[in-house]
Image (cartoon, rainbow, N blue to C red; front, side, top):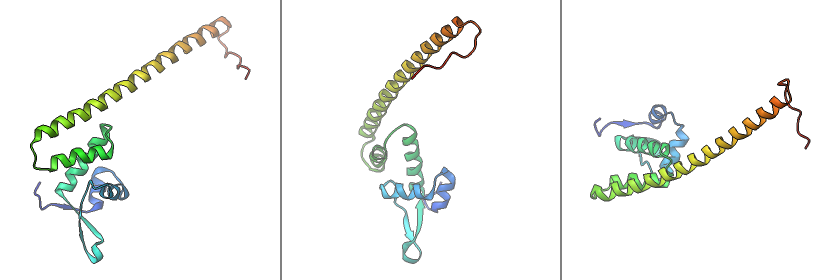
Amino acid sequence: MASSTTYTISDLAREFDLTTRAIRFYEDMGLLSPRREGPGGRSRVYSARDRTRLKLVLRAKRLGLSLSEAKDLIDMYDSPRDTGPQLRKFLQVLAAHRRQIEEQMADLQATLDEIKVHEKEARALLARLGDGSTPPEKAA
């Protein structure tokens, strides 16, 4: 796409299924920096760079990164520095999020295992009642 391509806030909202308010929030966070045009600079004009940054922000959110982490990483890619440090930082952030998600998955698995035990116990108690009817409610 040519760098001269521009987008309105509505264009980006429609393309990425976002509200214009969300896009303005990303702008307030320093993630996007549209040019201002029209009377009083009321119209935002987004560049191809802004569109790419928005796409990266949304990808970072899907990966579980905070907006500040996303901004740090995206800003790194915007700088003309060597990409080695940028990639190492990205790998560190991803590794931390992977560990966090793995811990959450382990917690969820433990909860599921506990539910299965309770279901098995409840079915066994229900079977002992004989007719398979619903067991009486517990007294509070």
